[in-house]
Figure 1 (cartoon, rainbow, N blue to C red):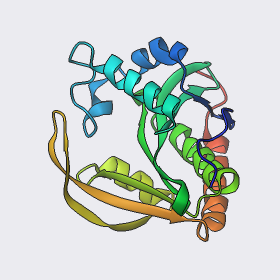
Figure 2: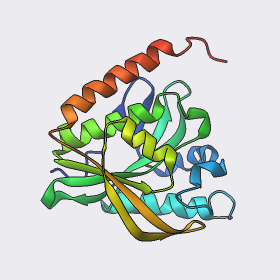
Figure 3: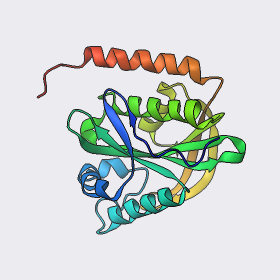
Figure 4: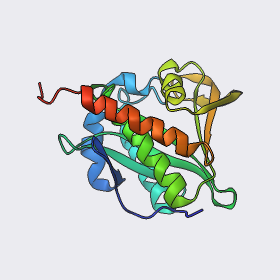
Length: 207
């Protein structure tokens, strides 16, 4: 498995994932302003002064050290940041990693942005980085996230009870999901079909 990943963007038809840089800070700060984004991750953002900056600096630092690999999610329609997602918990000796710290500004929900971002990151993980396993975890109460993971075909592996303490949330029981290299080709075809269907149904004019 290749780690850290090459410093190149991952581009689709809806979004481009750019490796996180300092100049993404202001755009991501604007995109992160809705508190509903952080319900299950860190409820201090955006209400507590300095909380977003601490989150951003932590992702930037972890990426620079190769402990994580964070992307800014850029809308191709507007060329502005609309969210972020990261490769985490890399285990090069075991050809595995996690996709997490994923969020989108609410205006980008149900636009195909999350679906395409997952496709880009998964395809890169399996085809380019050489992973045999990609895992996901989310708060067991986060129905939106769990539905999205099940929607892309990730396998539910169980609940890790009292897994962590989340700021402003408290004790979290984490639901674990995974996709393996053997599953990916069929899931990739399904995701591509869903994305094309979303593209076909999306209005061509902007409001």
